[in-house]
Amino acid sequence: MANLHDLAYEMEKAIRSSAEYTQLKSLYDTVNNDPTAKRMFDNFRKIQMDLQQKQMMGMEITQEEVEQAQKTVALVQQHATIGKLMESEQRMSMIIADLNRIILKPIEDLYGSMEQY
Amino acid sequence: MANLHDLAYEMEKAIRSSAEYTQLKSLYDTVNNDPTAKRMFDNFRKIQMDLQQKQMMGMEITQEEVEQAQKTVALVQQHATIGKLMESEQRMSMIIADLNRIILKPIEDLYGSMEQY
Ligand SMILES: [Ca+2]
Ligand SMILES: [Ca+2]
Image (cartoon, rainbow over the protein chains, first blue to last red):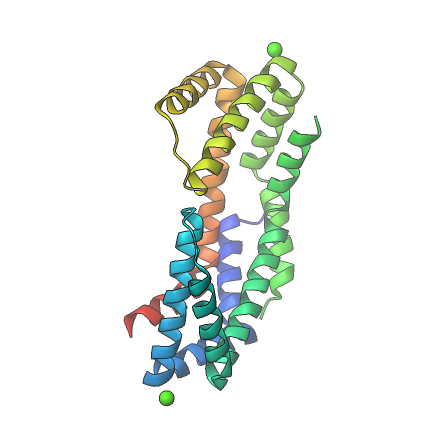
């Protein structure tokens, strides 16, 4: 049996050297080195995270907050680099979700068998 | 570069054939095939999940609910097989968390670099 930790480290290296990760890192660097883009992106992230936190805590989200968030999304998507960064993040999330679905199948099988009984 | 999906499937196999997974599966089967143990375990899981859901939704958890949950934990831990199953689940969770920490390090590095600027 292959050692689980060795495989995890191999996977870490494979992610780090993948085209998708390299592109994501490059877009992050570009945004980080552009003060205007960085400010826009940080502002967007803050609004997004505040809303998520409110949602998790079961707090009410006002119509105004929803509209402000939508405006911010529309604004940052118009910024060429940030738009690309967001698409790149989306692709990386899907890859990670996909890998997790494969790796965690044995665990899912156990819980699935539990519900059947 | 090793293919990410191939590595994920290798990891899936390695988890499935690990001593920890084999033991966990065997304990699940034992509990599933013992109606009394199964009922105790299901009841414990339900109480646990209800509390988690309330917590996530920001709902108040009463002192009575906390006490009932604690009593149920104490009760199921006294059942030899369920106690072992819970320990085995705990170990598996730690293994999965450990693997995730290794695999997702490249992603964490990106977000870390973001905060520094
Ligand atoms: Ca700029
Ligand atoms: Ca019994």
